Length: 443
Ligand code: CMX
Image (cartoon, rainbow, N blue to C red; front, side, top):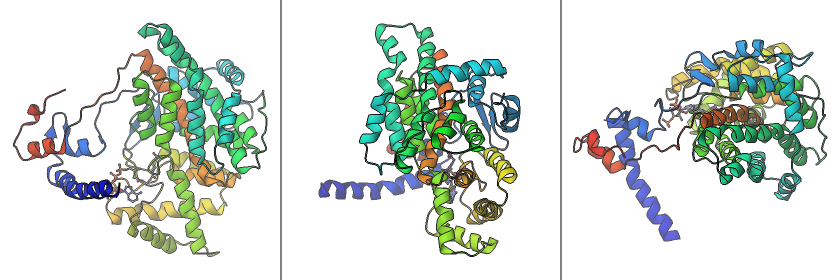
């Protein structure tokens, strides 16, 4: 084993300069439709995915079905006395592109209430896991465990026409979505609240019941509605959305696909960044004790993070080139509801300083904050202080968008995904002119 690892380390050391050279000297060389830099660099900017559910403009940010975040929040029906819309209304809107009436939403609310109960074997599974298991691992395992419920898998085994695929997919997505907040709340209370659970309230909407089962008073229900809608969809190319689409493209059902997407969301460069933001802020506070943070101390701490080779969590984006409107929406909420919260003030201070620091650092293409730079601070304010749970909240919200997408994937008969690989040697041969890109072949 030691020998294998030694040999592998040697091979890696030999190979790395080849990849670096290709990127540095020949990144713009085309190999068919894409460049060498795109092939090595995570397919950045390659237009090869289609979705009508949301679109991410680098400078404007996300639009859901053509509407900006403020337009979406203003258009959708809200529960009585609440500031933010029903997530059920957002699901309707993402699926159809139409804004539902209050009565139409209530039909979905009642349908989800009827499908909400978590199977006992999921509870047993969660309880069997060591309590220090990360909540994202628990969440993903719970989703995967329910695969035996898949209507799609059963109907497929019986034989089904391709143009009927979307209907059992829709059923699976609805069954799954209905249960997700209660599963998340179960994990939360089992891990952090003395294993004391709160039964669902049969009269509450999806997000309202989540707040109730988590044990948080108003206006946390509105925080949940806002949070789930903001995190729902960010077009198809991000890791969680793309993973769900990719796995479902093999006709794996919604349970397999969503569980896989949740695993991608758990990465520190993706959804886990929201917990990293809180970790960063708390380390900062610990270091400066009770001192009031200043622009200077924040700047110094940011540089220290960068100098130690780490990224500044919550900043940067693969597509966006301005402040994420999901960050702005949360900022507006915080300005209204918690303007004097010390952590919120610190987030604002970081926002003032970090873009300039990142610009001086000169690496990140986007020095502006993304959704994760803010979300943990609002959760903290309302009492959700176990920051390793924050990505589960992201996952519950993200499920709404990705499940709408795979329902449409099945409706439109999108095929199994299969991009083409080349070898490093082939790239080097194209870069040196030894072979022409067209000689690489297409299959
Ligand atoms: N702090 C320090 N360096 C950063 C940075 C940041 N916040 N963002 C990007 N960079 C660096 C990259 O690490 C990369 O460095 P190398 O050339 O040494 O590898 C360089 O800048 C270029 O990266 P990029 O093209 O600007 O960004 P990518 O598309 O490669 O990555 C993202 C995008 C979000 C992963 C990256 O900006 C990052 O790591 N941000 C911090 C983590 C974070 O907030 N993630 C949450 C994103 C939102 C979400 O999906 O949840």
